[in-house]
Length: 328
Ligand code: DPM
Image 1 (cartoon, rainbow, N blue to C red):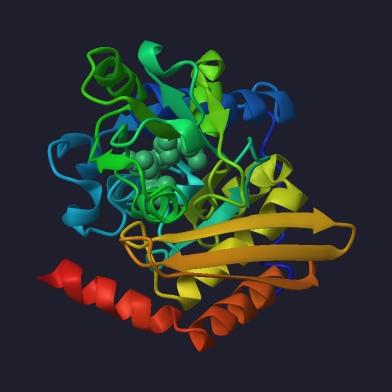
Image 2 (cartoon, rainbow, N blue to C red):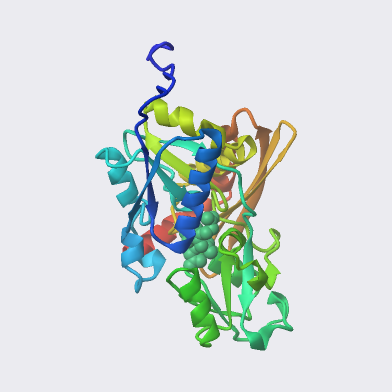
């Protein structure tokens, strides 16, 4: 494509086409999408915006464990369809829900500033005086994340784990009813929903690494849609972009999705990008973890190099066994 052809034309002063924004309907998704809409308004005063809320497969199938559904793009596919059929112009996702391979014709137009990507423990009243490490033998922790499960089993074999689905408020209600003694949830989600006061303990990265992209929003749009790409450019955060591109390249190289126990931790220090990654067996017995440093100028190279390192230590073997088990 020529440079000239991809130069965006300034939106004309008079009638501007509204930007149609696709979002899931959950409270968290709407808070996130409204943040994006607010940012767009701030950077482009007067730009007309239209919200297009959709239900995804993941919102409808609530009684099946996340890891058993085995569908890529569980929370994103319907939004992508609306981009491809032209009924929306951009889609706002929790970046961690967005598969690392996008459908033909769609691109990740911007990665926004990152909220705290760590995980947190939330506990019921009875457990206020405990820390994860000191919780009584057999305490029941709710999570559907294989990543959280494997790492916590590895570090705290005295705990028990139980699947939990539903949105954040549903999960907290189940905790109140005593169906679980504690929950592991993303700090980012709790903060965005004004529930930061429920954070009992933030999980230290030495114990639990977070999910690829956790805490960032991904704005997806049509490839070559220069008007939209230009409009969302000011929402991109350079540091979050470098970190998340490295994390996504790592996950892509391992062929992982939300069905595998893979975690990361990333940091930018000056021009340097530090990426730590881990792959674990579901029972937490074996856990491989290593770090790769590289340049922020080529974050994907850092992610791919780290994946290679972990493969040499047996990550492939662990993942193949998990994929084989999931197919049964
Ligand atoms: C994905 C996972 C979970 C969500 C798997 C993982 C958590 C499922 C669970 C890919 N998506 O993290 O290993 O704990 O049962 C999800 C949340 C957020 C986005 C909620 C959460 C909010 C945080 C963010 C569900 N997707 O993780 O507590 O925007 O990064």
